[in-house]
Length: 457
Image (cartoon, rainbow, N blue to C red; front, side, top):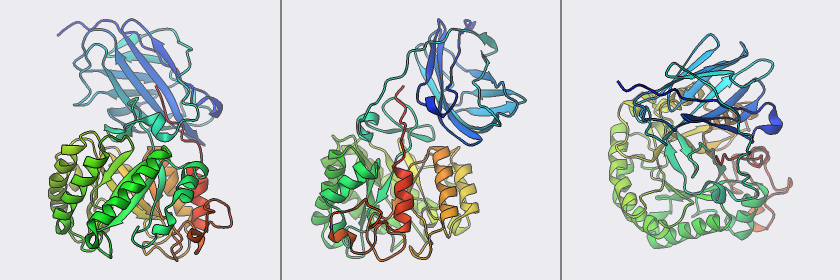
């Protein structure tokens, strides 16, 4: 074995909510570690840890962090194997990041809990070697007032997260259109301006139904409308999630040829853009995971041929519930993943219908699979009924903690309680005032419009 040079590591965190976005970095002769608290809430926090090797190549690494407060507990970690014994948290590299060449870095992260205060770790060892160093007080770059796309650039999948151009996990929050064949009048300059500037959304999901008077009736017309909405989102610095909205029939293979034609066209047309994400099957239902996987492995190469860098999101069994609604679980995806890179898996829920069992599945799956909640509602799975504020809040808090992106159903004035706007709103130009928002719209706007705090280092 090569003798591992003594590596010098230290890291700094930020105490208190007023300084969460000023990560401190330590530079030393052997390596550099950045420890940044990316978010904090009552009794809990999320932190990112970046380990950069500045010494000889390492074929395997284990980082130990001494947590100074006995109330600090590891809840969940990603991009590594995490464990805790007493006050020591241990992080070990996994298959794809355990080897670090000189200058290479590993990005990992954790969710933790604490009581009282949340002080920074006080001692570190890398592969059993004590690490020391001095703190570099240089602040991280200030992203200023840039748009989500300006700040994050082309997003990609890293580990179980969606990451930005700085290779840091990000959470995109936004709204989904209703079927553009029914509510086209809701998507114009005024409404998209409001979504970007007043709601401060990061993305617009474009729901293009395939059946139900959708794409199959006018492929060229619907493709053009989707491209127009992509352009409108791009002009306002938002990401566009192109949703091939298959629902009935539930087997996506029924629309395989249509999917190949559609995605070949939109991928070729939008390949130069940084704001496009592809969702290739909305809610597969009544079909096996094996069939869904087969569909994905035929459609993804079509997209990659034109747009090799974009993220692709694959729907899952049981109306994109990771199989829970069919009595299954995420294990079928974990044990038989889609044979492609830079992909995520869709998870959908409706807060009044899908509660603890679904949240438990999402939490468990999030440590093994890159997930994106491409659609969710604050009401029942029918799109109607009363808003379930308690369940919705529990869901959104969980998604924030796990840094999982989401799009709410729907940015429309549909006559159903899941709609963000009161009926008739889309006949006017006001998409932000309290007078036009439903109870669901008021709740979602209040959540989405909070600061994103995208990491830039």
